[in-house]
Image (cartoon, rainbow, N blue to C red; front, side, top):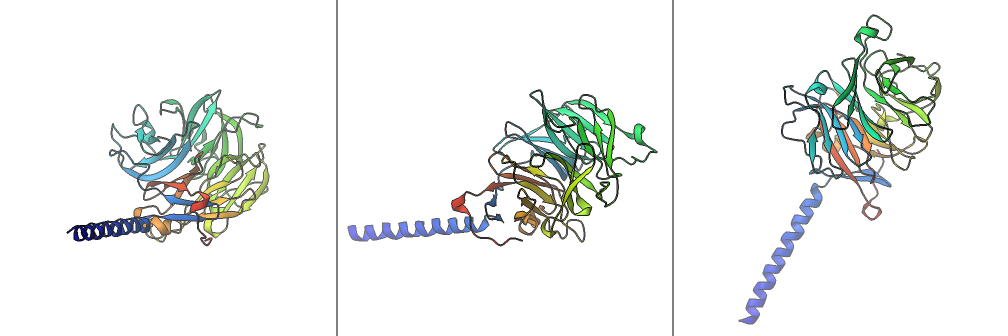
Length: 358
């Protein structure tokens, strides 16, 4: 009797073990990995949950706070009194908070988002395609709003449809807000930090030359800490262009096929690697895309490519529009139409496997 009971327990334990192994294998098969070399990542589907009230149409801009908070701006499919266009996620990506006292930031097309710390206080700069730039607190309260319709309508700077902005660090030759007109006439304009008033300094314009610098959809703009220069994601010219602070051309890097439509540029805390989202092409909206995110080294060579559209296009992650590094090396990616946002955990050295570069 004892032997039979023991055998029964053993068989049951074996069945439980097999079930656990099967469940573990099934879970492993559902995991999504991307990237190559030292920059490999795992998609974390349970992180960055959107509040139930969010009706996401297009995901547009991301920013990383010094405290680790993750900020996300987007275009809402509908607008009512409760609509917001700014979310703050906790540093671990588990919780989300809608920001702003009202729905003002939701009108027009909320697009670029950049964080800046000025005298130790954090602010957000919002580029809205409706000829408007906002400066807000980190809670989304508007401090100033500049709509340049009256100033530039009928001039060479019209139409004005800003897509991104940045503030150079202290010690840079200029320390105001640089705004890129990615969907308008292709200029970069300087605005005063405290008021948003135009500082009568502009460079760029539509074209493909380097001297003088001209752009075709200068979609993103940032400060490159490696080169200590302005960097423009010159999307339709398939390049990153580096600009001196007097508005003259410095250099440029052609973006190869895996990242040939660069939307923006972010930099890791190592100040060596850049993160570039590639919008990808489409035959019909939402139907086909080769959207990727690439990690570049200090010489702008591609060292890793996350082929996200191939991996998660069926989940709406087709057209990477912005991407940022977190302090721990993880990355956040948001997506244009259809709108989405995703968290990617960087794999430790012992977790990496050999994967071919795209």
